[in-house]
Every structure is written in structure tokens, then in C-alpha cells.
Length: 203
Ligand code: MG
Image 1 (cartoon, helix red, strand yellow):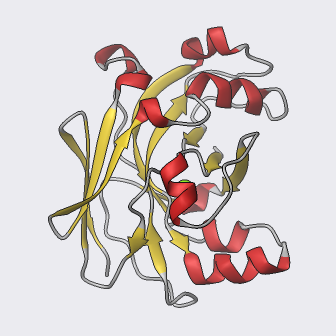
Image 2 (image 1 turned 30 degrees about the vertical axis):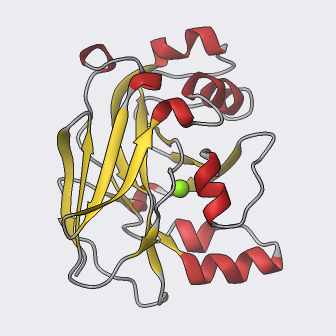
């Protein structure tokens, strides 16, 4: 299983980190060792002093997908959920300066808490989905999937023109504005269409 993530897929988030809005999808990997399931608590990694949350809509691939046209992408998605793209922002800033890949800032152990997945047929179409993320009870991110710069069909068509996706692979579709630091003891909760899917603490 692999995880592909999209950077800067919401204008307001690109702006808050002083990044340009990309003209093609910016894709990076997380390894399967990043995944945390069942709302298990996350341990603050020792190598960073600036761990950030990024709440994202996550789609799960249901069967092998290679060179899929955007109009057919829905046939390849068998689950929709939420995930947190945990980011070591201080490490990312250093490696961005060097022009190095984001791997260590984004792909460390437990950097991808993910929720249970819901069948797409049980949800409104992706562009109509809303999600939100709260830290210690205060809502910090409000995601409106209609605001994605690159839609899910566009993203998956683009990715599968280069990288084959397999059953169980996850796509993190980018974060809206409102990202920020986490601290030991923080309580993170996130809802998709009003249903709470993520609920864990930072230890
Ligand atoms: Mg992200």
C-alpha cells in the first residue's frame, strides 16, 4: 500500500504558507509505515520542534488504476475518509531551502493518521463534501472540497498517467487554510459531513 499526497491544492492554504499556486499537481509520497488507524494517539516525534496538522479528504483506491481518464476515476474509488498530513514544518522549511525532497518532513512514522472509510455511494459527490478539524475543541480548518485547485478526477487521472495505483492505495487531496502547530496533550477531532471520523490525542 502506498500513500500519495497533494501539496498546495487550496489557494488560501498556499497563500498562508507564502507558496505560489501550482500550475500542475504537486505530488509526494508517504510510506505505509506512516499510517495510524483506529484513532490511536500520536507521539510527538523527537526530530522536530514544529509538528503541524493538515486535515485532508482522503480517497481510497478500489482496484488497479493505470492511465485512467478523469471521467472514469469514480469507478476506481471505493472509500472516502479523512486523514491528517502531519508535517515537521521546521524540517520542511530547511529542506525546501536546499531544494531537497520533502520525504523526511512528511513521511516519518505515524505521520498519516487516517479514519475509517465510507463508501462513496453513501456520500454526496466529492465537490459537495465539507469537512472540519478542531484542536482542543476549537475549529481550526473548514474544508470545502469545491475549493480544490485540482479536483479528485483530475488528480487521479494525472497520477495514474505516471504511477499505477493499486487496491488500498490512499490519496491525500490537500489541506485547506488554517494549518498550525500541535503540542503534546492536544486533542484533535475532525468531521466529514458532520460525522466525527478522527478523534485522538498527541502524546
Ligand atoms: Mg498536506
